[in-house]
Each structure stands twice: as structure tokens, then as C-alpha cells.
Length: 82
Image (tube, rainbow, N blue to C red; front, top):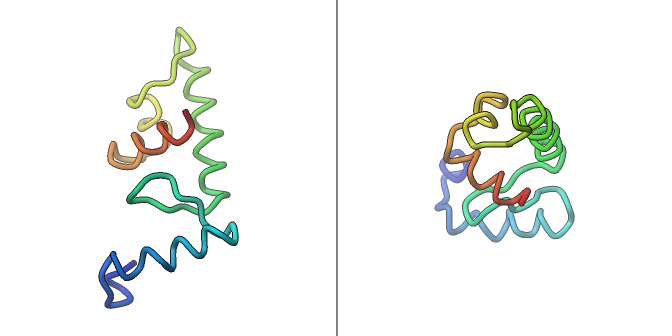
């Protein structure tokens, strides 16, 4: 996003934080902000992936497989849900 706006990520962060304060975005980790509805979709997928596991476990692997998210996104999301 910073690249598209031709600014540095450091310059973009205050704007993202402001959007978070008015509940337009949620900070998932130091590096990631997401729309609340996207987080809700990921949460639903996490629940389905956990229930589908033979021991009802949610792992990074089955979460990634269920959502198509890479590990750089999956790990902070699962930490956020924790």
C-alpha cells in the first residue's frame, strides 16, 4: 500500500493506526492490519480447519491449506486469535 501511495511504510503506519481507532482496520501484528470482516472470515476458516483435523487441532499447516494464506500471514493471524 505504501508503494502505491509513494510513501514509506513508516509514513503509512500512523494512517493505518488512525483507521484502527475508528474500527475500520484491526492491527493483527506489528506489520499487518486487516479489515475486521476479513479477520472474521479467517476466524471461521480456522474453526473449520480445526474441526476437520482428526484430533480437532488447528495447526499452521491446516490453517494455511484452508485459507491459502502464506506462513507470513498465517502465523501472526493465529497468534492474534490466541
